[in-house]
Length: 247
Image 1 (cartoon, rainbow, N blue to C red):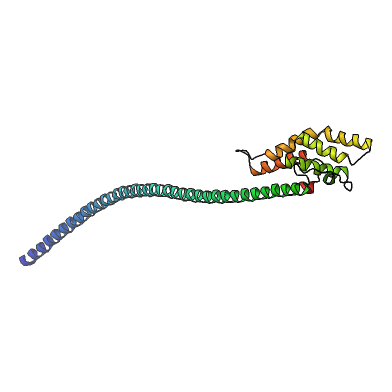
Image 2 (cartoon, one colour):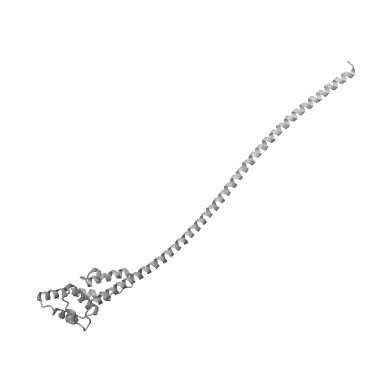
């Protein structure tokens, strides 16, 4: 074989060895680089995972903090709102109470005025009726005025007592007037009966009549109580008088 061919063969063999060595080195290098890349990738993933966990924890903590702040602010706002509502309701209640008190006070004054007016009218009417029944002025007692044969004794007795009370007759004047009246009757039994009626309970009636005339409203007494007591005294003062007349 020529020398040139041998050299060429050796050259090719050398080149193959070099290429094979380079290929082997490249494979090893590639494998090594791959291992490094995998390691780096794993480290990066671990780092990312760690960072992710830390980030999640930070986010969670931040969210919880914000929620707590919002809750506290909301609670504070609710308390302030409740206080405002309570204050507003309290003011409204006080306003309504003041209006009711003023209205009740006004109505109370109106009722008292009406009752007082009605009571005065009743007293005035009662006095007018008594005056209408009074036929016996002091110092003008005559047998013509007192001898009223056409009236029954009970009716005359009511008129006699009413007239005596209104005119303020003394017992002597009342006795004189009664004697003059009795002169018109000559019936002994009737005379005794009239005297019994006259002096049985008349002193109590006279007391009630005097109380009725002098009764005034007390400081702590309401008009209703005063009116009721006047009605009570009037019935005791004139027990035989009809309720229609007393009213």
